[in-house]
Image (tube, rainbow, N blue to C red):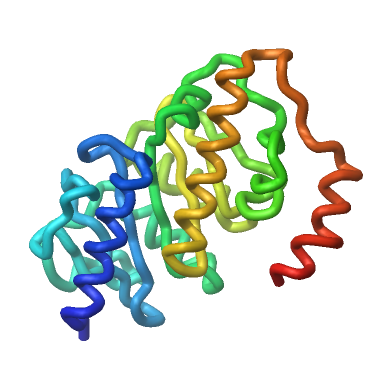
Length: 213
């Protein structure tokens, strides 16, 4: 059902989370749809930057049932929920990069993250922000799943972020560009940065996104 090549690729991509500085220790998790109803999910408590084969769980997407391997991440409920809802997406990454996580803890969060063109082009011109829910809770799983039904990036208050992508490169690109935008916002400080206007975003949609698609 699951090949060694798939396990090796999943591990390689998990290690990439550390190289991209998207998380510390066990603060994130990763999933990958390898068949229509089968996904690999990082195991509970595992460290993605040094994930090993015995940290990889095999789960049924439709039911959330573990088929093989260790207990999946406690956030696997929203990973599999997103994969159920988004047939066009195959990878879900939950991460806690430095500047995006700072913003997740701010009392007054930005109304827009569109400080650079890469955000509306790749992450989405609207980034939903959900309230704080306990990690691993049903409430968090439902909120993230609902947010990612129509968006590709979500900010979880006082917690972290999640993105979904067609493949690993797509998911990582969204995560890295979102972190880039958040760094600019934090470093500039409130009132010292500007965001793209609706006309500028519309211009991107016509001349850049059209070419990408």
